[in-house]
Amino acid sequence: MRKTSERNAAKNMVKLSIWHQNQIKSTHVLLCTSYPDPQSKDVESV
Image (tube, rainbow, N blue to C red):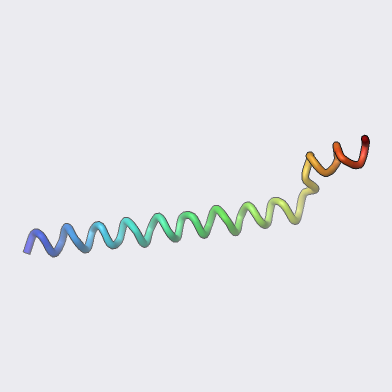
């Protein structure tokens, strides 16, 4: 019993980390699209 619950916990951790990474990616994309990249501003000013 205990081994299966540990295995399920590990699976859930993997799912959580993947979901977390996806959340970070989507928010990063949102930030990049809604705000101009400071680096691109530097390129324009040069």
